[in-house]
Length: 127
Image (cartoon, rainbow, N blue to C red):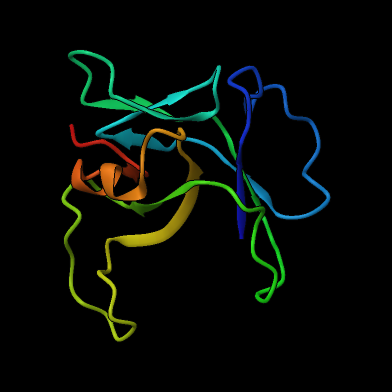
């Protein structure tokens, strides 16, 4: 898959048609960082906010041989809960793991920068 984070103005309420290919995903939360709408990259978390709501994301299928456009990305793991742990499944992944999304990052940052901060996305928050 390739991933495109849509503008915050695009919401589930105002999307009337499904995309020609792929699907839209909404309701994700970013843990440890924030999505910068203006520059369309991951940025530092906002002060005093543990989680920030992500805009809608368009999952676009691509051929397995074809790689997405060359760009700096962070391979952001998506988990069901903030615990980030679960039983190890036969695939070698935690049962809490959903998928990895490639999110654009600013030129001054590296993937390692965000990995060290433990940045991930969650499908739900703890209450």
